[in-house]
Length: 340
Ligand SMILES: [Zn+2]
Ligand SMILES: [Zn+2]
Image (tube, rainbow, N blue to C red; front, side, top):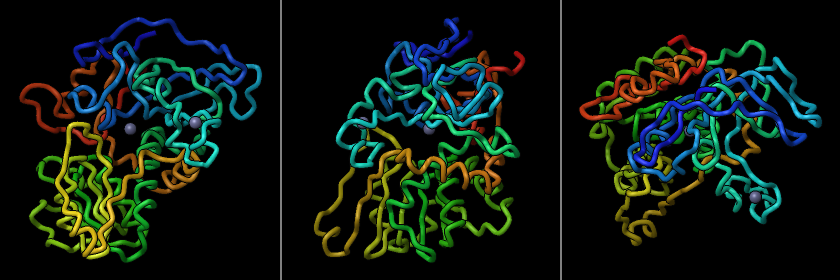
C-alpha cells in the first residue's frame, strides 16, 4: 500500500509499505477513507512537536472495516468507523483512575506520532478504539469528530457554563470548533485571529451554522479582562490569555507548541482568582459523546480541501507550510483513494 512516512528531515515521503493484516484476536484492519491534517501534524513538520522518524503519520481518520480478528464482535467488514487515536493501556495507575488520556504507557502508542497512523491506504487498530459511524453521517462530518472530542474535553475542563463570556485565540479548525461548541453550549463567544484568510474562513463557516452568534475579529477587538473563559488554541498565548481573562476567569492552554514559554505573575493569579487549565487531548470515555455531538453539527463546512496521498505537498501548502506559503485552507483532508 501507499503511505506517507515522516523523514528525519521532517518532511513526508510517499512510500510503499506492506498492507497491515490482523494478528491479535481484537485487531481490525480499515481501508482509510480520509484523514484530517491536524495542527499537531503541521507542528511536527515545523519542528514544534516531536515525532518518530519512519512513522506513518496521520490520526484523524475515518474508514471502512475490511478485516476483523477472530475475537472482534462490535464491527464487521463494510462498517464505516471513526478512529479514536488516543490509545491507552487500561492497566496503569492513571488508566485505573479513569484518567485515560494520562496513560503512562502512551509512549510508542500515539497514532501517527510514534506508532503507524492513517496517512495510508490501510491501517490496523484494536477494536476498542473504533466507533461505528451513524448511518446518515457523511465522512466529512465524521472526520471532525476527533478534533471535536479534544474541544469538548477542554471546554468541560474549563467548567464552561451557559452565559460565560468566551474568548478564543486562533481561528484555525480547532479554534473555530471551540467557538462553535461554546456557542452551542449557550455562551457568548468572540473568536480572535490575526490571519485574514482564516478570519474570513472562520466567519463564513460559523455564520453558515443556523443560530450561531459567534463574533469574529482581530485580537485587538477584545477588551482586557472581558472573558470568563479564554482558550489559547495557538499554544503560545498564555500571557495574552491572562490579560483577556476577567477576575475568576479560566485560561485554557490547548495549542501544542513545545518551544513556547510564558511569563505570568503569580500575584495576579492569586489576587484575581485566575485559573490556568491544562486538560490534555481528551479522555477516551468522552469519545462516544463527541461522535453523537458531531452527528448533530454541520462540521463538514470546515473541510476546505481533499488531496490524494501523492498531493501532500499541495495539502501542506494550503496549510501555510513551506517557504512563502500562507494559509489557504481550513481543515485539509488526505484522501488515499482520490485519483491522482
Ligand atoms: Zn488531531
Ligand atoms: Zn495506561
